[in-house]
Structure formats: C-alpha cells, structure tokens
Length: 305
Image 1 (cartoon, helix red, strand yellow):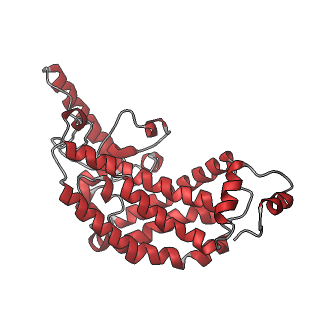
Image 2: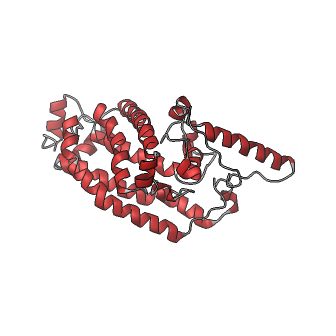
Image 3: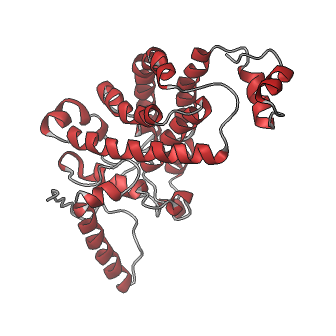
C-alpha cells in the first residue's frame, strides 16, 4: 500500500511531477495492500492462458489450407473437445496448485524486495531486468528439463507433458502438478536475483506464458515478430522435442537455443532438419509442393557427447 493519501503528497515526496503512468498507478494501487497486488499474478495467469491460445484454436478448427501449410505436424488435427479437455485439466491445476503457491509465496516476494512503490521503473530498466529474467530462467530451466528426461523423472513426472506429441497452445502448461512446481523455481529465480517493481514482475510472467503458448502452438509463422529475437527457439524448435517424445535428447531449452548448442543437445534436431530439407528439395524438383510438416521424416535423436 502506498504511503500517500493523494497526488500532492506523492509529488512532494518524490520532488517532481508524476508521469501519466505513475498517476494511474497511484490511483489504482494507493489503497490496495501489497499482498493483494501480488495476488494479481494468478488472475493474469488465468486470463492470458484463457485468451492467448484462442487464435491458434480458431486457426486449427478452421482447417484452412492456406494456414495449414504453416502447421508443423500437419497430419495431426486437434478437435475442439481435445482442446477443451486440456483447458479444463490445466485450469484445475492452476486452481489447486498454482493458486495456493501464489498465496503462500507472498512473504518470499516481500523478502526478496519486489516493490510496489513509486517511482515506476523506466522502459529501459524493465527491458534489462526482463532480459536477465529470461536468461536465468532459460539456463536453469534447461538443466531442470534435462533432469526430467532421466528415466525416473520422465516416468514419474514429465511423461504427462509429453502426452501431446504434437503440442497445441492450450497444452503449454499441461503437466504433472509437481512439474509445475519444479519448473516454477527457475521462473522465480530471476526476480529473486534482480528484484524490481511488481509491474515488471507481472509482465515477466505474462511474457513467459505468452512465449510458452507460442512455442507449443504447433504453428511456425514466417511473420512472427519473435523471429527477430536472437537465438530464439520458437515453435518449430520445441515441437521437435515433443515429436521425438520420451527418448528426446534434443532441444531442452525453453526459450533460446544457445544452451542446446553449447552442450550438444541439438544434434538430433539439426540432423532431422537436414533430412527434411533434402526431402523438400526433392519434392520441389519433382514439381510437388513444399510441406511444412515433418511427420513423414524418421526421427533419429542423438545424445550429447
């Protein structure tokens, strides 16, 4: 809760006029306790998970041939019932597991220094903090994901997420309840190392969820703005990991590709791309059409050495 009763007190305390964004923040948060602002995170999680996959759902159900060429595994079609079942199960996990976790984590958020006060962070400050959050989560999440592909980790926990060999947007957070908790730790690590304003904290989890939904969407669109992000994996990169499934030794990173490159866990993916590229070139030479799917390409994954 902000220690100001009105705009005059806030500007007097800061020694300057508030920006438009700060005035809006003052009006919204002045009378709200900090724990209530922290609990907004679960509301954003549910809202964006319910809305962000909808365009992919409509695209999938439209069965448009113009759009189908962008579908990575074009032979696999998800029905509305499939998507609804997945949505219900994920929402149950959110309510039963993630909600209580958000509530109980408030003392930790206060301890590490996530603030709700004025002034608001600048755009540059938010950018660099978010970049650090992504890098920390990507690196630590890479190793956690590799551990989940051990025999014990996969059989007891991670196999649930791999029930979708051809993922879809709604399946991004579809996982065993313990995996939600385990992979939540790398996501919390960034804000713990570089604490910032709670608006940055909110934005971090929204962006991370949007990224996960895109990489699980099952579609590789050439016009996606994420293609301009250096070392970004994207949907095609992560889709291959699901395509191989249990025995996958490739593409463990959640966002970027540098960990898989450095530790040699992209060999199977690169080999597969090479085979698929040759098949497409042969089809084109024979007067056929390019096919976005790699369903017909045999999967051969390689362990890192």
